[in-house]
Every structure is written in C-alpha cells, then in structure tokens.
Image (tube, protein in one colour):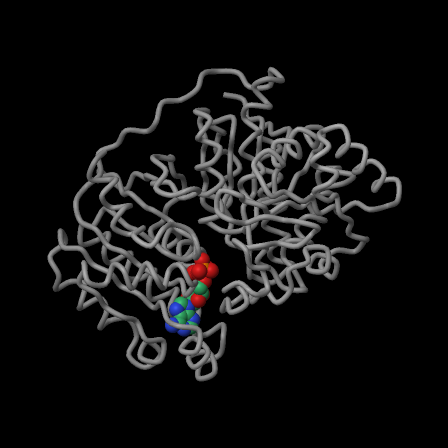
Length: 422
Ligand code: ADP
C-alpha cells in the first residue's frame, strides 16, 4: 500500500493521539515506536513515527527527526507532518522550532504553519494566543509542568526564540474568510520573508480550512487535530488508493495495571478517582533514590494479576517542587520514568496484558522498556486516546497511552471496561 502521509511525533502519546484521529477516517494507520529499520516496509497510507524528542537536547532531537523524515521519504511519503503537543510543550531552546527548521530544509519546504489547536479537547488558538479551555496557556496548569513549564500564551513569542527567521500570524479573521483568503495571507507573508506562520483555530471548521489551504505544503506542523481533515481531503483529491480497513478486533490476555507518572491536573484527578477502586502503591522519588524499585516490584508480585492495581508517582505541584529541589529536575523525572518502565517489564513477565499509562514521557519510557516497535490502533477511549495493541511472543498486549491532561476523570476505569466489552 503506497504511503502518502508521513508524520513525526515528538512523544508517544502525541503519536497515538494523531493515530486515533487519523484512523477515525477508516483508513489504515501504522504507528511505529522509535526509528524504523531502513529495510522495514511501509504498511499503511498513513505512517506515523513516534519519537521521544520533546525534551532531549536540541541537536539530538533534530538528528532523530531528520532520520525519521528520511525513512518516510524513502517509503514514499509525499506530505509530511511534524506533530507536537496541543499545549505547545517546549522551551526557548526548542524543540518545536529547531526541528521544524531542519525538516523544512531537508524536505525543501519554503514555508510552514504552526497550529496546535484541538477544539474537541479545549485547546484553541485565537489571535496567536493558545487557550486551554477558557484559560490562556500561561494561566493553565501547564504553567507548573515539571519539564516544560509554559509561562506565555503567545505562540508567536514562544516560537520566535526557537527559529532563525521571523514568525508571523494568520489570525481567525482571515481563517474565517476561507481557504482562498488564508492562502493569500500565507503567500503575502512568504513574500515578506515570514516562513513560520502561526494559524488561529477555535473550531474544527477552522482546521478544515487550514488543512485545505495548506494541501500544497510539503511540511505542516501542529497538534493532532489539524491532521484530522486530511484523509478526506487526500481521498477527494484521488491521492489515496486501496481500501479502508476494518476496526482492529483482538483478543487480549488477562491482568491489568495502571501506571501513572504524570503530574498534570487531570491525571491527579484521575488517580484520586481510581484510588478507592484499586490496590495502589505510591512511588516516592526520594525513596526510589535510596532503595531503588525493588519494593515496588515486590508489592506488584504479591497482588493477584486479575486485581485492579495502580502504581503512581503522581503528586501535587508543591510536592513535585520538593522532590525536584532535593534531587534535581532531571534526576527526579528520570528516577520515576525508569522505575515505571522497570515495573512495566516485570508486570509483562508476570502475565499482565492490559496497561493504562498516564504521562507522555512516562508512556515513552514504558513502551521502550516493553520493546514495542509497532502498534495497531483500536477503539478510541477519549478524544485522541485509543487502545493500541502489540504482539509480544504468543499473546497480545493492550496499551492505553494517555498524555497528562487527556481523558475524563474516570478515564482509568473507563479504558479498562471498554476492553472488557470488546
Ligand atoms: P505529562 O503527560 O502529564 O506531561 P509526563 O510523563 O510527560 O506527563 O511528564 C511528567 C514528568 O514528571 C516525568 O518525567 C515524570 O517522571 C516526572 N514525575 C512524575 N512524578 C514525579 C514526582 N513525584 N516528582 C518529580 N517528578 C515526577
């Protein structure tokens, strides 16, 4: 099946989010975790490569993104997409801007756009400012993120220090006028030397206009929702061949475990909601530094695999600050990620087949530890969060990989019950 669309995502949950929205179209979507081997064959018209480059040093992020673009290009991709978080998670150094610039150069893209809006999940961009629900980004819980605290809501200001040429804006008033008006605005900006353009979107219709206006672009960047109209646009343009897939039906083994390494506001509520329903074990970064992960593994081994279980490092912002002051930001994060990854390995060894993982970075660490290379996409649990399936030996493992603020308060129970029903 020829590949038309190649996407590079900066973390694993971002990639599953994109996969979920694209697969709503019914066209097959393949999600690869980490760089494919050069001789791996493309299997779907929509190929997504999930990297873990959101918070690594800029040069490394660029190197990996370029290697992913090379595989996608060789596999036949004609259109490229750089997917980052709908809350524009980045620092003044990057990695959103530097990766965009490197991809533009590699792919010969003369201009690109930036649109992280995801209206269905309450992320909108108006006059260049990103909102989470009704709050500007810098007043939302993202201001306290452990790795990428977002202290400004202006995407133009956030992006400017990350790229080497001016950043412009195509605002909602232009987008509301339609495809032609947006194309003209982008062309005008290009003649003025503006190669990086933030595009407003407050509703799905704005995204459809923007996706259509940029159909001729070699590279588009944004959150997942901007890619949602693409399957239809590509099909209408006669660019998709083959048949639409059926929803993946799979038999998953027993045993369930919720692993939470996200400290985002919604995850904190999800953990609180699930605690009374499950046996739980809390990871304390200071204790991890002193005693390692063995006590958590012992705890896990003692609980029958069919019981509901939750292992979490999720903590309130002041507690996180306390751990970060004691251990350093990177060290405390790494200790938790490594612990949850090791716990996931042990759980798989114990026969647990159903995993719900909260946290983008955390999910990346867990799938790496489980040696997962490729996932098929199943039912959507919440907007942008599907069940995903991978083969491990003679059984199928199911993974729900949720980034911080996604899902409703009862997400953990909801996800597991959806799997029971399938
Ligand atoms: P989200 O999707 O909410 O951003 P991530 O997993 O991407 O979640 O990021 C959360 C980061 O915070 C991870 O690196 C994780 O290891 C770290 N972390 C989790 N719990 C704690 C804690 N109690 N103290 C310090 N850091 C923590």
